[in-house]
Length: 394
Image (cartoon, rainbow, N blue to C red; front, top):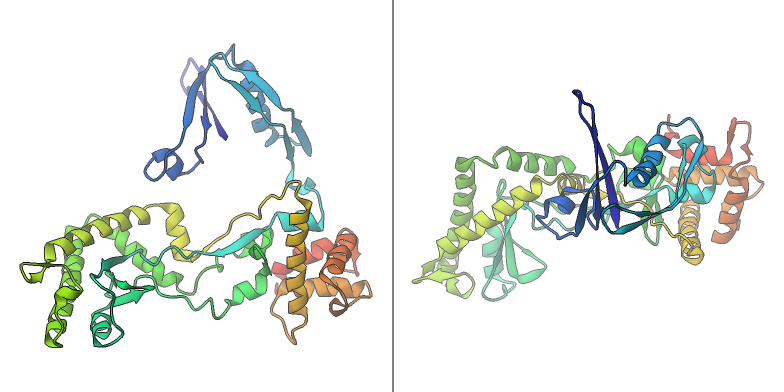
């Protein structure tokens, strides 16, 4: 359940105001409000200045908190009966200035983000061709591959990358080789790789796939030509020509192409495949215009917040333990690139301990105890020293 409060004021006299409330299931995204890809339920209420003043006061208190010099402002929960039904039960808010945030190891972890590799893009910028039967792993498969029709997981489907006749979603080798930025800035947990909020804000520009530049070029080409019928016709022609070449190559090899491709009166059904191409191209243009998808596709990563565990202490401790386990594994290496591990090791050493002698629980306890204590003669607390790990090379 979300609520969006709007307040309008005329620039010219009379400078009267209008207040409006939207509430329902929609997220504040294009997908949530445009209705193109998912359905939402939203109520729209025009607020009466007099009768709905209690509701207006509640939201104005929250907005005012952002401009207040007071370090902590609490807005109490409210049960508001609108002049137009229904009754709204509004939560308590506690607004805290950034410099006044609770300072502790657990808070620091909770404020971090997860590093999630974006994987649901193999079909983007490609046309999938269902085959009438699976490809045998012999000369037939090679004929399709030679014409840039690649098998992807299922043997009865091949895909054609229509940009530059290459697979438009190149396979990253990051599953095999961890990127340098990830090995430096991230810590593995059972929820995925974690990095601090500060580190993400400092280094978001380098937290991307190795193929991001290539992906960006392809998306920009698609957007640039989204209304260019000549460009579309050229890509369509290339696709149909490659498919026609497969048809001819199969015949030359003594294979009946109708065993794999759709035919019409004994020939390749070009109209059917042309319609498939045009439909897929239109879908890809729509995706490319979605800022969220475009960012995920180009950079190859998403950075969701660490889940809020609320009162589930056991789940939170499991997360902390997996984080500490990873730090201990990194510390056991002859040389680690993990800047977090290096800073944690320095703090633990200053307390006359070594990481190699600690369990995950002992490490968590030690870091929690020393977090707000001065670290050596650095002028920082241990928590501040660890929290600045992303600037270790500065």
